[in-house]
Image (tube, rainbow, N blue to C red; front, side):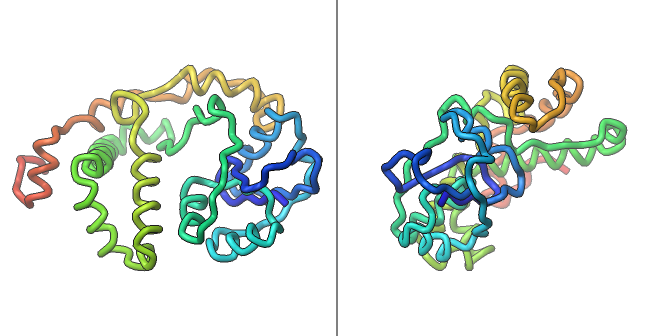
Length: 235
């Protein structure tokens, strides 16, 4: 059985051919991910049964150990948690398919100007917080451990989840929030083929780079000053 939660990448601890076995896929909250991955192997989503397993790590780990789940479609958060239960999985998602828009910020075009001052401050602080995890990961991990101790009951699992979150949120572009129009364009034919979208859309019609400069308007020195609780002239 193949299971999935809200994510899209498919992982498995099974060495056989998924197409030759009874496979079940969980109905995804976001939708689309497993359909895309299976299509690259010539498997139609309708050829497999589906089941929802949720995101409780211990329950999913038990199902995998008992071979009730052969493959698991989930986000990096879900698969990282499984490592705390001794589950080792291989990623079945083709590398090229991982160039997929994620962690996007969406605002109604009609309200961008109205909300711009607050959006600029929010995105700058978000970028600074993300950058801070690269500058002093241990300090940030300690803060997170104090803020959400329940996530750190197993210290190794907590740190693994923290490391995964840093990697997931840190930009693959030079600037925080930089736009990748070619990624949005390149995936649309496959999305349309699978019926995930009705028509291809010009990315220029919905991508907006007017907030990127503000999101990157900070220095590492300002972040280190914040670490030391020193003012650095911002309001």
